[in-house]
Image 1 (tube, rainbow, N blue to C red):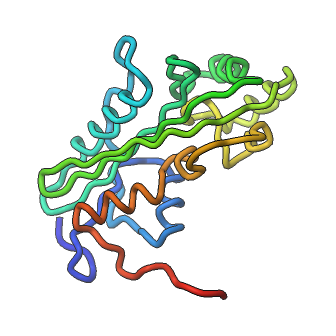
Image 2 (image 1 turned 180 degrees about the vertical axis):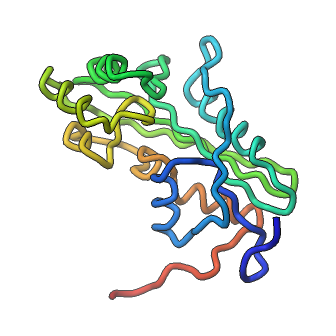
Length: 203
């Protein structure tokens, strides 16, 4: 892959998530290419959520490897205790996940991996989310919205489910799908720089 403008190596985002593209754009990063990586996302036995998210993020980065490019990959795991709640297979599973999280706290672990020059760097960020006690009408209405499709844990905090979340602790961008400060630090450690920094001062 040829270099990007300004002599920087091209940046490949190994994710199909529109949320991650939006989050990157928020800090002025536009990938040169988007190449979703297909990897096995099934947890292994009693694999802890943090280890799971790191393994999958690293596998995605490796699957999208391209000589001369910097590859960015991420994976988000939602867990109640040690149980990892993946992307619901259907509406019934989405409803079951919501009932499980109702009225209690759960963990959201987002791992980021950056592959450049044959070196793989990665980091995982843990956050805690509390979901209010949901009524059956809450569950049915959310499932009917379809917003749960393709979402770890079966919900999107930045969407309709935000009304279910009275409290979080940790990185909000990581809960959405990408911890921004940590992602930028990994990219810079790999030698990738934004073309321009964020503007300072007021409007």
